[in-house]
Length: 331
Length: 290
Image (cartoon, rainbow over all chains, first blue to last red; front, side, top):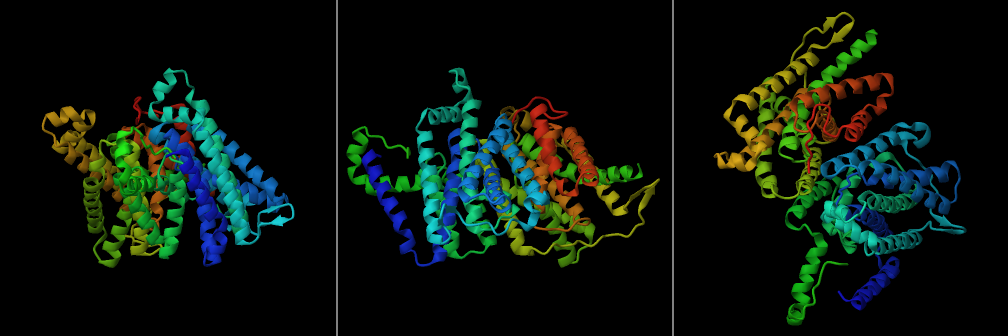
């Protein structure tokens, strides 16, 4: 797509996002949107690892959980102010991502996937059993709301603007990264690692950088989540969170910037609209994952893109095809 | 010292089931190269089928055991036909994601059908515990281990001497050549998945007499089965059995002497250590998944 068109769409999207708290029917609806934005940050951060490097992580919730626990415990036990706890959460999660990544990135394919699960599960067991630090299954309670000096984000509308800012920042960083030297190297690694190695690229260095940035994003999302919900339990490390994220990334459109955000919104909002019980929701999620992998590997984003081309652009199809303008899923 | 002997004996009992799970997963992961995250769910279904046949339908336990295994095997064959056969030549991660979807669907389907209240399968027989020196072993636990070992040995004979077993070994050594010699490769894949699933179901059906049956019992079983298979060396049956005993015994030791809450972490720690130090496994030849 042309740049000005993209900018125009982005502008409209931003406007809608800005006035959203006023047009939504209830605070509950706003709450769902806030959760969708938290998931959008997480899905974007997972997509940075999986979508561009091709390494599927089923343990990404580990960094979300580390961020959430770091921030909650710093605020509750050591009385850190929110900005300090927020930044610390990102940094500790990034550090954890660096350490865990330097081990798991030695493995490829199925071994990588299994090792990411192993680390996330170990962290879950630690959060359950290290009572003196994490309060075990009872969880951390009375976490103060997000704040910035005297400005306290204690209403859903204020929290919404805060997480919106975080999401936009995350997407911007992801966009810049993907379109930089790093992004091209990662895609090269995904497509043919040995070729990349042959032309003198050290895959490990780039992958670790990517995982560390991704960990930071998940960490700040965790921090916001803990302070917004005000309660934190070891459930954040649960395998189901990873499955949710994978469905959002793959269902939305892996390897694109817009896809995982779309996935985060669709797979957070639709179950709420249908008022489906958790069991039904998860049964359907499982089936959706199976169907998407089989029939729609590009996710919803690719579906929308195809429909757009078929129905909107068909009138100018001649110049599109003959004029040599190729449209790629390059968002 | 007496406590130690008892702990190791308890570890051996657990290992029998881990071995059944791991042998099944060795077939599916090691040979079919299907990273089966629904393996624990097949084990869970084995347990729930046994519960349904014994408690709800009133069948005797031994009949229920056989029927549950057969039931899961039929289900597995259908799954392979419908889901994995069309994806056979795709990337390993595509098939893996399908099994993740299956895992989530099965776990919550079980929650829906059998509700979240843990189920108990009545003990089929009353025998006095076996006492060797200071070590007490419950007769039921011993029978479970003996059946597990018998199933694994039966499986070994099946692979070595039956026509289907030979077709399986041939197929996974060289699919094209096996196919050229008239082996119906697609059916062999289906049988292999069914057989691996049957082993997992047998583990679940046997353990349902000792532990409570819950819809989430499979998740831990899956990760442990992966740990054992990788520990033993991918595609190596003897390795899988050795790995099962290493995991079972070190888990009970850790639970007794370190902290019971961290018992489940042993599998992951062993997994990461073996991947770092000897990715081919303790008994494995160098053979990657890629």
